[in-house]
Image (cartoon, rainbow, N blue to C red; front, side, top):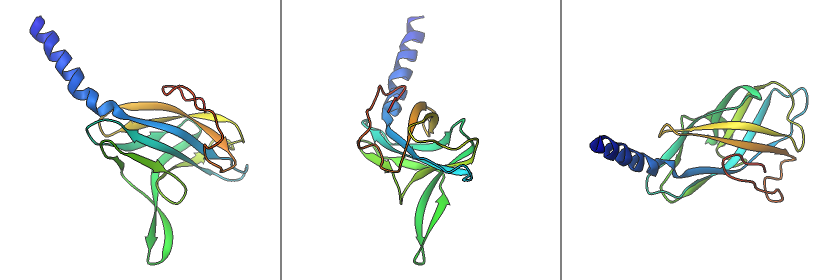
Length: 154
């Protein structure tokens, strides 16, 4: 019995190193009623000693969510779906306009100014994180209040 408990404790400690990525400052731009897509930006902070990666995203406000990046394709900026966003140990990665971002496709209703909505992030380590995105006019999170991490009220 003691050996089993020791193994469980070791497993918890060894997998806990993966749980050091946290998303903060999640925001989205408001959308017009006829626009079927939206976007979510955020900061991914890895305070741990092991790398992880964001591998999928979902939200009940859209039929589908994908991770995208802007790339320069022979002088033309294009958006492309990517399999993941790497978050190196001890580093932060910004999902921001002109770079990595979450595309919300098939919005179920327009994203209205000051509304909030849930977003679920899944990491390569298998861990999931539930956050809240705040809809604004495209100004990011500079003037918004930040709440507790596990249920961000920004």
